Structure formats: structure tokens, C-alpha cells
Amino acid sequence: MILFENVTKTYPRTTRPALDDVSLEIPRGEFAFVVGTSGSGKSTMMQLVMKEQDVTRGRVLVAGRDLDRLPERKVPALRREIGCVFQDFRLLPNKTVFQNVAYALQVLGSSRARIRQTVPETLELVGLAGMEKRLPHQLSGGEQQRVAIARAFVNRPPILLADEPTGNLDPDTSLGIVQLLDRINRTGTTVVMATHDTVTVDAMRKRVIRLDRGVLVSDMEAGDYTTGSIPRIRLEEEAEAPRRADEPEASDGYDDGDPTAYDEPDGLPPIGRDADEPRSRGGIFRRHKAVQTSDR
Ligand SMILES: Nc1ncnc2c1ncn2[C@@H]1O[C@H](COP(=O)(O)OP(=O)(O)O)[C@@H](O)[C@H]1O
Ligand SMILES: [Mg+2]
Image (cartoon, rainbow, N blue to C red):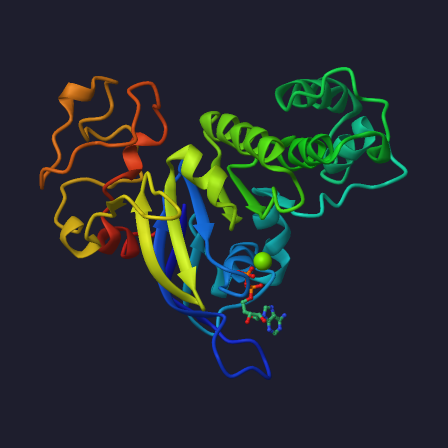
């Protein structure tokens, strides 16, 4: 779904790259945190996925598209598949909650009937039923971010990027927002969240990709921001695995929801995975090399 191959991004008039030879794969349906201190390259990574920036070296693939070869006229179609949420909400201040969310569908040319159905459904999903008529300034920060998430998700994009969505929120509110992103992830949407909010990352026990000054320094399954927990599987060895990890239907020992059916090739336990988490199971052990050569 999202693949970085030896990606280096150096901005004009800078010496040190913002991203330095980063390779990673985020399969469809996964929830991944990208962590690192300010300036470590998190936003740059997001912007490359959106093709708001171009790589200096390497390759970015998103939903089967090689972004370096994507003609400009096809960029809007790419962006329709990616919902975005930011630290500062970016709501239209003079529009109601309903209008803010509806706007995302209007620009896509959706019918009024579809808007009337989908917007309330989405507001309900994010926990804002009954707040349709409020203006952003009549909402708390957490509620405003929920509106922004509803707007990002209202056309059901396969990918949702959230760049420090809890950066302006207190810890309790932040946890609610991340749990909402988790709920969205459970509908099948791939979620990538950049953050340096250690508490929420630790609470969620999801994949944690860590950047340090543009370098990918660790990639943990069910990671723990502060200590790290389970080292991610060695990608080179995984290339030998007999399946594509981005195909959740593949027989990978997770598919039947029976944790005892788990059969991991080198003996690591399936920590951090619940039997009732159907969509994220396929992603634990991925065939990095094999996927790189595929044409998704
Ligand atoms: N548009 C830009 N022009 C020049 N340098 C930039 C630009 N955007 C980001 N950078 C630099 O790239 C590095 C990574 O930034 P960024 O991706 O924003 O990191 P993060 O989101 O982790 O704080 C920083 O050194 C930053 O100053
Ligand atoms: Mg940033």
C-alpha cells in the first residue's frame, strides 16, 4: 500500500537530508505510528506520500502508483485516496460542523443525496452526532479534531495520514482521538500517524516506525515508544517467506482468528495481536524484497 525504497529527500538550500535512505513498507489495513523528535522527517514522509514533495533519490509507491512517474494530472486522484489530518485542525471557521465535512464531498462532486446520508453517518462514527449545526469555535479542541477526522474520512479513503493530530490536545483527549483513528483503521483504512506523544503510542501497542534526523532507526511491531519492545522481523530473511504479507487472505496463521494457529517461522510470539483484529494481522511479517519487486 505504501512503500518507500531507499528514499532520500533533501530540500533545496539545505545540506542534511530530511529523510536519508529510508526503506519501509506499510501494508494495506495497517496502523503505524511514525515517531521522532521535531525535525526528524515525519512530516516530510507524509508529504511524500501525498506527493506534496518529490523524492530526491529512491522511490515511493502508494496504492500501486510510482509517485515519481505519476503525471501531474493524476495527482488529484491519488489525493482522493488519502485523507489527511493535521495538528491545527484546519477547519473552515465560518462553516458549521456539517458544512465542514460536507465540503470534502462537494469538491468531489458528490450528490446532495449522498452528502445528506454520508455526513451524518460519519459524524456519528466520530462521536459528534447532534453537533452538526455548531461552528468550530463552539467546540473543544478534541471535538474540532473529530470534525477534521470526519472530513478526512467522509469519502472513505483507503489511507488516512495524521500528522501530529494530538499535538494541541491534552492527554485524555489525545487518547480519544487515537482510539478514533484505531476505529477507522478497523474499517479497513490504512492509518499512519506521526507523533511524539509517547503516552498514546505506548497505550496503543501498534507498529512504531522511528526516525532520527531523517534516518529510520527502528521499526517495532506492537512497539513501545520509550523502550521499544519487540524488534521487527529482519526484512531480508522475510523475503524467503512463501506469501505476500499485504494479502490478508493469505494463509499466514492469523486468518482464522485462532491464535493457536499461529505458526511463526523463527519462533517469535504474536505479541500485541488480538484474535479479533482481522485486518492488521497480515502485516506482521512482511516480505520486503518480494513486495519491492511487485507491481502494485
Ligand atoms: N519546505 C522545507 N524546506 C526546507 N527544509 C525543510 C522543509 N520542510 C522541512 N524541512 C527540514 O527537514 C527536516 C525534517 O522536517 P520535518 O519533516 O518537518 O520533520 P518533523 O515533521 O519530524 O518535525 C527538518 O530539518 C526541517 O527543517
Ligand atoms: Mg512535522
